[in-house]
Length: 550
Image (cartoon, rainbow, N blue to C red; front, side, top):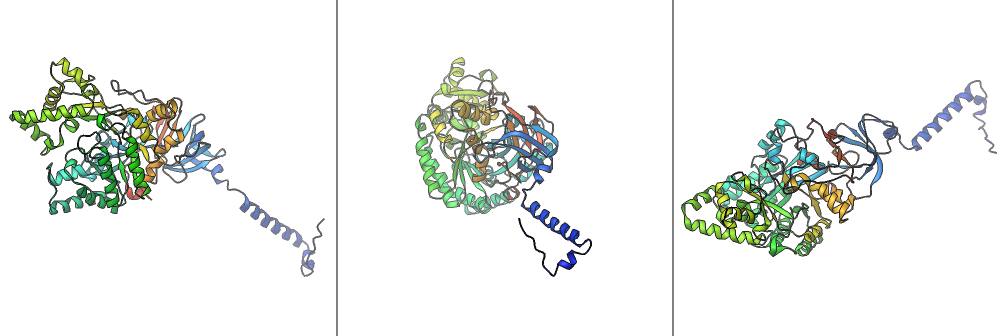
């Protein structure tokens, strides 16, 4: 028993009527305050949200194991993640039995044209994959004026968020046309100034397509000069490297060039849609991995992305025609071939060689032939036989008549898996919102195919790791901080899906099939898909590097 002694000097006052009761009340109030201060906060449990996602398995994007948790969203921001069982909300989503994850980021997207078109800007093929943010203008292609492109994006509303790259090929064409030569000092100054201007608009980095004209005409130092501008703005360098299939320098030398640009320009570099393509380069994945890992061990920020398909996509002009023939532009080449038999023979010889580098005419599947739609879905070999001509002659004839797209089965599955296992490889589609009759299936199925094939069927990746490659790994490679992570304070791009029902039915002959398994998708806190059905709201935004990088 504790003997509580009242100090003598207080005794007379405590004995006065009402004094003791007042002192006790004060003491109890102090004790209550101390207990409240020591108790865990209950604000999140008692709070109210615009959207409350209950009972899901949260995969936060970091690669950590899934946890059972609720997610509270206010306006466009994740306000809380945890036990929110006592919270209220205007809209509650029951995620029992489902995975809740950050919205997927597609770092190599050709969707810009579709996002500028009212009929396609809702981006349903992207949302069905769980994609909530895309990075456009890859391969050095796109408009040289990003401000004008932003205005087009905003005209009809966007189904997804958009980051822009500065497309160096477009910038170079504006300054130098499509000439195969180094820039003059004055032109070099103008090239840097234009990259500076476009980076200042909020672009996330610089893209090149050194395999394509006119990028192929630029030497390494010219690219370093432009990349240094992007570096000063905190941007990245993303490149379709100079060669992937043994057409010129080979993929190993092309990868070394990317690393050298990262070193000299002092910025992160992304080897986009990394591959060891065609008979000459297949099987080189281990050597490419060693090159990149050595660069990272040196302290360079070098990354890669890929799509999970054995076939690449391209066009007769873009891949089969030798680069040196395209100096001056495709229209100039077409006119020369029609007027000069020797030019025709020269180009035909180049196309024959390119076809063999791609594995032969039976490896090439025609997919977009507006001038001869009856050939779509046939291999180049089959199409040539139906016309009683040789494959190279048919390809040249199609080139002269207009654009012809195709896919070519040039990658080995073992190389794809080797790249996918690396801790610096992200998932990206290289797809878009195409009007083509037979687009590459990657436009409809890239992200679900990784889950369906490489997680569920083959076990190459765990689900948490796969989602990390689609979300938070982008935050390491790019100046993206507001997205790709499911935590308090980040933007509320959220996917809710059933991993056992995720499917990518899109195929090479029937590509226009939406992916399955996304039950709910939120873009900036607004439902774009609810209970598997598309909403009419278009909540995407054009994103600015400065505001998104924190």
